Length: 282
Image (cartoon, rainbow, N blue to C red; front, side, top):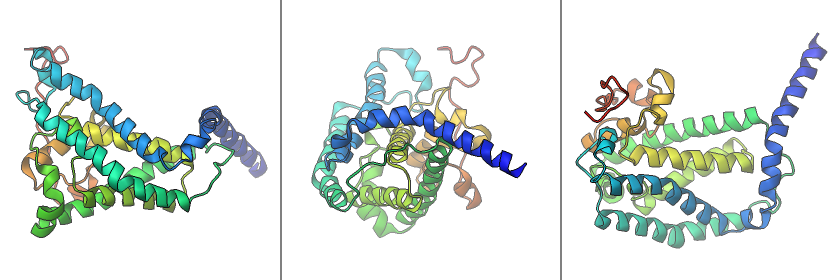
């Protein structure tokens, strides 16, 4: 019976690996690019700007499409070009001047060949979840310290709070120290869990999306925090309240640390919540 169960488990693991193998084989055709020192910066910037762009378009349309305002946490606010462009400029500047030299050093000490086999699906999903949970805990501690210690807040974190009403391109409007801290947490976690390169890529896509969504200023019925049950995930409404009130909701994603340590504050329901037809412009 035990041998039979072990055999079934091996077949299941093999099947889950085969599920991702075509994707991994396709990505490996771009191995020269993926293994180049330019890839992390290009991947990060293109993914980030790509996720920000739909929200920028919504912000541009917002004054002329009143029905969009019911999904805005701050309906009367739309970022101006004088707010958007400095955020984009700072992101590009920091990635070129600070992030690229570090990725060059990391590239010089990293393996030169990608593994031939894809990760198992269960391994990929579990590693992404663990990376998010670890990052959430690490940044919670960092974030509380940089709010409770005045010198740390003034020197390193205040720039991120320059825009009290957040918008997508303000996600990475931060000091170099904060950017390096987030990157350090990411690197430590994927090294600690020994994540497969495909897991690392997908984790970074998920992490960038969740960060952009948290700062987007839009609370949709299909936003991530409305898809995760039991209020485990705070999302955009949770994080926007932090930007408005400063002394609550320090965790970037999940709610358990704020609830355990008494810094959780529930966000008010959006304007469309009590509308009987799913958010009609009433």
